[in-house]
Amino acid sequence: ATTHSGALFLSESDRNFRQPITKWSWSKTVRRLALQADMPLFSTHTLRHLRLTHLARAGWCLHDIATYAGHRNVQSTTLYIHLSGEDLLRKIANSVEQMDMKLGNRVFGG
Image (cartoon, rainbow, N blue to C red; front, side, top):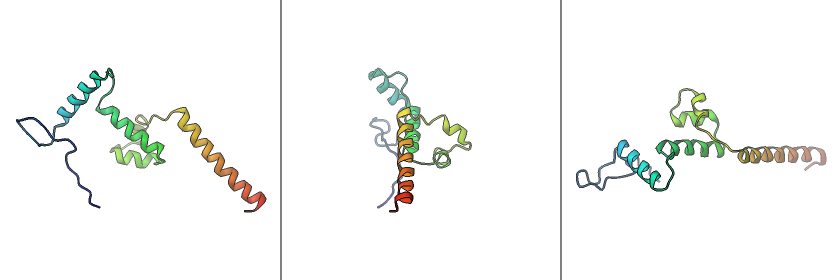
């Protein structure tokens, strides 16, 4: 498998056809789509929050998420991670289940 890094989106403009779009153009496009969808608070930064939250849900440790995000301070990273009560309950239930299995194996042998 090859990894290709390059532009994710290319311009369709006659002026710079098939050239990577700028951050400014991407931001304007996302803003226009958000307004069309009646989601005025949605921005390119929303996608950053979502990605870092998904990494936390996937079990990444805070330090690794901070490194991925380019944060020097993990405290900055905590501002981007938005776990719900349901996320936390699922994590607690999984931990309790694992501890119960270990205890059961010790008590009943297995």
